[in-house]
Amino acid sequence: MIEQQENTDQVQFLLSDFNTRLRDLDERNKLIRERVLLLGGNLISSRQELENELTEIKKENLEIKENLSKIKKVSNSLLSEFNKFVKKDEIILIERMLKDFQPLEFMRKKDVEELIEDKLSKKETNKYS
Image (cartoon, rainbow, N blue to C red):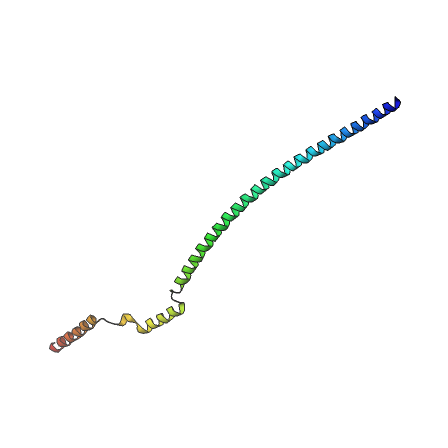
């Protein structure tokens, strides 16, 4: 009977030890499951944040491309118009030519005719006076 009692005690001890280990493993499994769920949730939220950021970056990139295209059009337009402007050297040359030419000292044909008539009439008046 003592042997049986000892065997029963050993079996109970082993069962108790097994039960304790089983609870520990179950608790550990539960903690690991919670961590995996938490990691999965974090992974999903991180993925959504990254997708949102990527979408924003794509929008900004498209906007930058459009702005760059507009800038290229404007710069090409400015370059084509720039060639139509007169250069400073050309203006100086024209200025010199105008100074030499002095168009304000020229007379119209009508003015010349009037001047001749005036002179002739003065001569005639001087003759008779």
